[in-house]
Amino acid sequence: MDTQKRNAEKNKERGDERLTESGIPVKPVYRPRDLSERGFDYERRLGDPGEFPYTRGVYGTMYRGRPWTMRQYAGFGTAKETNARFKYLTDAGQTGLSTAFDLPTQMGRDSDHPLAVGEVGKVGVAIDSLLDMRDLFDGIPLAEVSTSMTINATASTLLLLYSLVAEEQGARPEEITGTTQNDILKEYLARGTYIYPPAPSMRLTTDMFAYCARELPRWNTISISGYHIREAGSTAVQELAFTLSNAIAYVEAAVEAGLEVDEFAPRLSFFFNAHNDLFQEVAKYRAARRMWAKIMKDRFGATSEKSLKLRFHTQTAGSSLTAQQAENNIVRTTVQALSAVLGGTQSLHTNAFDEALALPTERSARIALRTQQILASEGGVTDTADPLAGSYYVESLTEEVEEAAWEYIRRIDDLGGSVAAIEDRYMQGEIEEAAYRYQREVESGERVIVGVNRHESEGDPEMELHSVDESIQEKQTERLREVRESRDSAAVERNLAALKGAAENGDNLLYPMKEALAELATLGEVSDTLRSVFGEYRP
Image (cartoon, rainbow, N blue to C red; front, top):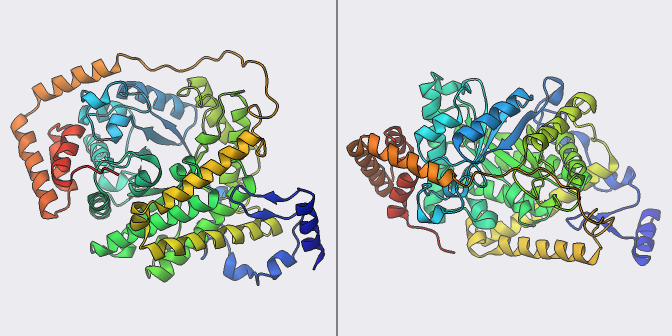
């Protein structure tokens, strides 16, 4: 038994065994043999940044040219209120927009629907019609800004509303850039804002792939999301494995729908969580790029370099924020943001320190943005690509994370793929077990959360918190009444009937949907039209 193994055994005996949050053992020290014993080969496993298998990054110089996109998430109340926050953030130096929508919008309900009571404008902005989308981006040139929209079940509707506003501004299709999350599988798996059963939901996704390939060539059609899987309680390894399994399902569905891989794959993007275990997170991002390149090349025969490159957005972990000693969250967010940057993210959102208590205030949102700006301007992290490459620990951990993720993917494949595994509740069960284990460790004190189960203090200082205007539903309801009274009702009905026909006949849904929205059909009316054909998903 070599020295390291003997030390590991001694550590275990005296209760000093260390594990990452995914359960990967961590040795007291790492040496060259930790890589040589694996047959580690630099060119095969790493290569240079911008070269296959992209472990070290998807671009050759990474942040030397320009730093990652600083895309702070914002959305609350009315479209006009969120528009004001967008302008505040861009004036403060934000370089991309990221939009949160309220639950009725996410669930395909207009603000005057009985199920929307108490939820309008609460966790995001309320969007009912083209008029709201105009207000949301009033004075913001959509030909010059990239916009991310966190929307899934109604992603096609929101994208079309956005493109209509961009067209009204005079933007050309090739100038419209951004991302719709559009990842419905993780809604069944972890989050719950689905509308239709999986099969028609996947059809909406692939219809958007086809539509954007023809009409919006620079739009990222999907952001395949591990973020919410992690927020639901998964480990880093599960987040990576389940996200890539879902991505495989989307690619398979698109290929089965007749699309060529290299036609749509370059516009696929990913969305990962940045959690507290800094080195494990860096390993996760590096492994993700390597795995995706292999999946696209070997499994789907992609030949375009753009199809092989995994580009991703990162958000710091909302689930890690504490209501106790809330200002500690600034430090947590900084560590998490650093992991994303060291791991080579393309864009980043940093959470505000008060989000365990309320939506961010302007002050807390500014601090969150300044965190990114300090990292980019003062931390030296933009000077070289993949600065942790060659670390015996980081390379070993990258290998361990990848091996564990492949094991999960093989299990999911054996079950018939992500859709079947979700229907069997396999992935949900794995997440629930991991979340339970994590919470048990916190409650026992085995996992330290500063300010919660260690270094507690009596009482926290008073803080200014953001509040949402409770009259917003009344305002949105009145606006909807005005929209329905002023529009051409016959044109709306005609276009909604065409949408229903497309749903029944298997035609691409986005073309008739756009015509209906242009005539001021509401989001709820479009969703109800599809409900009448597809039904609703009841787990």
